[in-house]
Amino acid sequence: MTTAMTATDSCSAARALAMPADPRAIPLPRWEKRGRIFAREGGAFFKTHTTRPIPFDVGDGRLRILFSSRCGDDMPHPAFIDVDPADPARVLAVAETPLLPLGRPGTFDDSGITPVSILRTPAGDLMYYVGWKRRRFGVTIEASIGVADILDGGDRLARRFEGPILAQDPVHPIMVAAPFVIRRGDGCRMWYCSGREWRQTPHGPEPVYSVCHAESRDGIRWQADGRFVLEAACDGEVVSAPWVVRHAGGWLMWYSYRGSDSPEAKRYRIGVAASVDGVHWVRRDDEAGLDRSAEGWDAEMACYPSFYTHRGRTVMLYCGNHVGRGGIGWAVASAPFTDDRQEAA
Image (cartoon, rainbow, N blue to C red; front, side, top):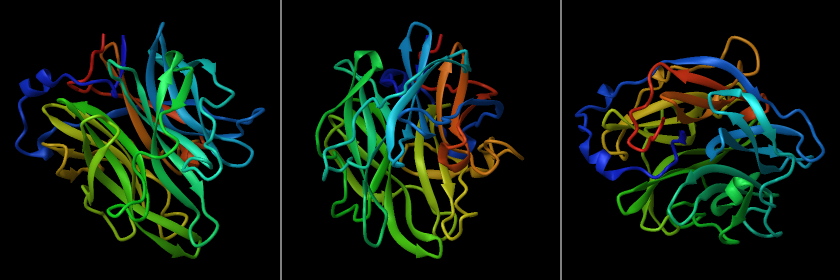
């Protein structure tokens, strides 16, 4: 059995784990790159990109990797490939049409949809996604968080609401995006991105954003104060796409980070932070264990890590150059996560 690390967690197992006193003491795995899995190279509808790989176990020996691909109008749409979880470079099926149509004109997701997190529940599985809306003046986009039901074993998505579940508001004046949601106790926790500001640069307007934390009883209505949980490493830093796991009694968060003041500074790297409570984090980016390659499809950028465990082996999925235009690749951990939400066979 394969378990993507978005499954409902076991609270009793979490309580049994010993809580580390120092987040710097939480062990981190080493990573061995195994190569590229898939790159979108044109088609009848999708033209480019495989952005934000999200693993989803659909059974029958298949792992579905959801992501967004762009159409001829450069708008992202939810798509997927099916792979062998033991060897994800063996692609079994490729979706050539969107799982969910864009929203009606004027709604928050009328210019793009990027799937980013799956919550598995007894009542049904949910897909949290980023809804994109193009802007004409001053800045280029708006971003909000929506939710859809996963139907027909993952073959179809149905938006739960026409509006977002989290968007611009008094504590999120710029944008919200990139949620990662887990069940915890009798509620849910979410790590997500919120904007600090838009900056006007010589290469165009740049959003500056980082990671926040929120809680919810039902996964729909969220209590969020907009406070950032990661300390910025430099002025104008962007931190995106948090993915959180329980490991060795603590918490680990993987994410992508970059600068914003030049095109070269915008080349993402993969970072990691550790925590004893999931709220207060210590960055350990130098220990992330996977960097850009010397050449090839992930030489300019490595970003958007996600994880699944299959038969005792933890796999990282990640995007390459140009936020996934270069494709999706994989790497294997030196030791599996001791994640209290795993059920790996």
